[in-house]
Length: 625
Image 1 (cartoon, rainbow, N blue to C red):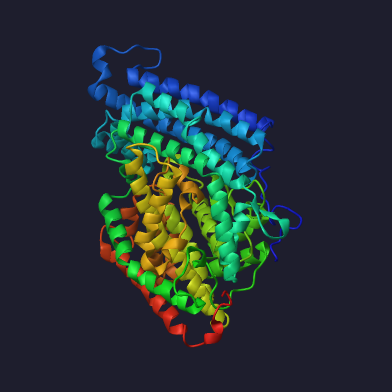
Image 2: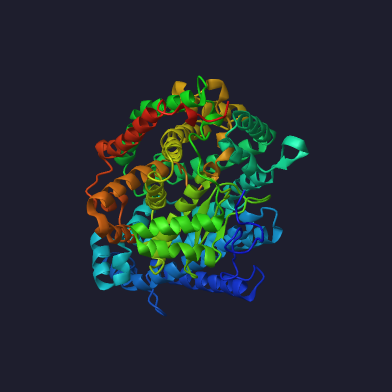
C-alpha cells in the first residue's frame, strides 16, 4: 500500500517540530516558559491594582473605587491589559501545544508528559487573570465598552470577546474557587482525559497469524471489502474495549462529574447552555438544527437500506457502515494526496491551493499510523510561529484523503487569522468545522464527476457515508451525551449503564436500518471528544459545519469567481462575529429550520442518485459477502 512513510522524513509520514522548539529542555522552550511566568506576574499585578482602583504609586480614595472614575480608568488601561492577555495566551498556547504534539505521537514519552504538566501548572494563574478581567468588565456597561472601542482599534476588533468575558462574570465563582478549580483540573479531568488517550493508543489487539494490531489499524479495517474481515475487526475491537471498560468508565465518570459540578456551581442552566455560549449559538438555532436532523432520519435510513441491498445483506451491521461500494479509488501516497488537494483547491482559490504544498515542504503533517500515537485526526496551531500541525492516521484510502482535506481546511482557516491578536482569533467550533468540511466538500464535488461509473458511484456513496456519520451518528452522540449528563448528575454510571445508553441512542437514530444485535456499544470509549471537560457536546458542531458548508457551496455556484474572496473574509471574521452574523452575510438564518432542511434536501438528491444507480449495473456489487 503506497503511503510514502518509508523514510520517516518530514513531509512524508512524520512532522517536524524543531521550528517551534528544539526540545522541552532547550533554551528556547525554557526561555519562553520563564517569559510566561514573568508576564503572568506582571499582568496579575496590573489587574489587581485596577480592581483596587489604584493609580500607579497612589492609593485610591473610597469614592474612586466605584462609578465613573473606575470605569474611565479601567477603559483607559483596557488596551494595555488586552494586549497583555493576548500575548500571554499566545505564549501559553505555543508551549502547551508543543508538549501535546510530542505526547500525542508517543503517549509513552515521559519527558513530553513531564513538560506538558509543567506548562499546564501555569493554567492556574492564567485562570486567575481571566477571573480578574471579568470582574473588571462586569462593572462596565455596554456603553462603556463602546466608548473604549472608539478610542482603541484593538478593543474595537476584540469587542465580541470582551462582551462575552463580561457576560461570563455571571458564570464564575469566587477568585479562590476558580483558582482551586483550575488547580484540580490538572490531576482531575485533564488526567482522566489523558488516561483515555493512553489506554486507546497502547492497546494491542490479537490478529491473524499471531500478529498484534493497534486500535487504529483494527478500526481501519472497517472499510475492508470483505465482510468477514470487517466483522472480525469489529469483534476484536469490542473485546479490546471490554478489556479496559472499567478504567475508561472511571475516566468518563470523572470528566463528566467534574463538568456537571462546576457548571452547576457557575450558574449554568446545564452543560449544554455552556456549550452553546462557547459556540456563540442560540438555543433556538440548535433546536432548529437538531429538529431538522431528526426529520431527516428516514432519508438516511433509505440510503442504508439501499446499501444493504447492494451488499446483499438483509440489514446492515455497524461494521458495514464503512463498507466500500462501487469501485474504490486506488490507494495513494501522502505526497500524491497533497498534490491532488493542491490541484482541486487551486481551481477554487489559488491562495488556498498554494498553501497546500507548505504542509508537506515544511513538515507540518504527522500521518503515519504507529504504536503509541493517538487515534483520529486534528489540527493544532502555534500562534507565535504562525504555523499549524496536522495529525492524522493516513492509510491511502479515499476516507484518509477526505480527512486530510478536512484538516487542511482547519490549517487554512488558522492561516487567514494568524496575524490577528488572540482575542480576535477565537472562533467557535461550529465555524471551525464549517471551514474544514467546506474543503472536504470541494474534494467531493471535484471527484464525483471523474473516473468510471463505478468510481463515481463509490464517491457518491462515500459522501453519503460521511454525512450519515455527521447527521445520524452525531445525533446519536448528542442524545447519548444529553442522557449521560442527566444520569451523571444523579450518580456514577457502570460500564453496563454506559453501553446501554449508547445502544439506546444508536437505536433511536439508526432505527431499523441497522441490526440491533450488531451495533457498537463502546462508542463512548472510542470518541475522545467525550473526555474533554472544556468542550462538552463536541458533536453538533460537526452537523452545523456540514450543512453550513453545503450552504456556502450553493453560494459559490451562484457567485462564481467572486466567492473565494467572500469566503476568505467570512473566515477572517469568524473570531470577531457570531455564527448568526456570519450566516447573515450569506442571507442565511440558523434559527430557521428551513435553512437546515435545504442542505438536507441536497443530501436527499444524492440518496436518489445512489438508489437509481443500484439496479443499473449489478456488476458493481461489492464482493463483501
